[in-house]
Image (tube, rainbow, N blue to C red):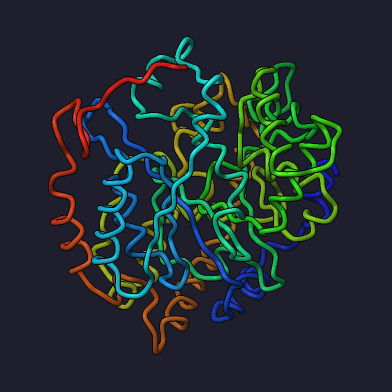
Length: 425
């Protein structure tokens, strides 16, 4: 189905009460079993911070993520990485009260060794301990192999949650997973997402790597892998054939765009399209609320708890952050209003984006919805702790800070030994 027709089919009035009915009325209803994943990588950068798990991502994660949904940290399967990952998990367990994060190894080094890209992107491989960007992306296609949960989510560790997360941020009252994306203007030169999808027999130019968490139905992942095996190998599906198909695609020059690949497949699948609520901007049907900023740097520790802050003041002060994808740099820039910062390679959104943003700002519906959401949060919090921060208070962050005092080390060092460049096989 063409995206324009899809959006037209989901058109509705911009009514805060309609939004409340769709997303907030069921805030206290439990989700199916849900686990969220992030990854660990040791890296060297100009700031001298060598462990990506030490990013400020955890400041907002510990404050806002629902404790009943467990965090799974996937990491490289080698001892040099396993040691700091265990330290990470120990710190998380000490800094939280309810959920118990776990670490699980993930190893594709043997499979993708021939596909490393050091010759064309030496800096990337020089910075990473033993994996490249292909392996960083590959595990997201097989999340269902690492968990038995019905809902599987991914939180990139360069994203900052904006507020406490409730069911209505992730799933509609009609049990559809919410998916947020940015659609680019079609042009003669395909975007990287279109190009990646075209290798897989998928027609979609939507970027779904803008807001987090990205959440998948468990069965969606295997359905996607079956599609890829049929398209690439014209053979029956098996885990072995999946990796054969991946290897063959990489040899042909395919570069994974994991979120756009998986959600692009869902968009064109009648079965899986019906299981998601696709919220793609720009559109003229409804406003879209973001859940996490992306690639904006520091994630500040919240200064007030949910119960302490004034809801109206909070909404007005943070309105721009909620206007998706306003707080998802480098996707939208103020330097050239209406354009994407990654315009040169990612496509562009011109007047249609400006029209969308203006309509959201000019209408009181979105502001009213955000205010109603704050009330839903308070109602949801009645008689229970809505976040790890509410449960543990400032001690969470004090424990976290003490635990990671030795993370920021001189350039060239990481936990477990010096950083060593491992050239491509």
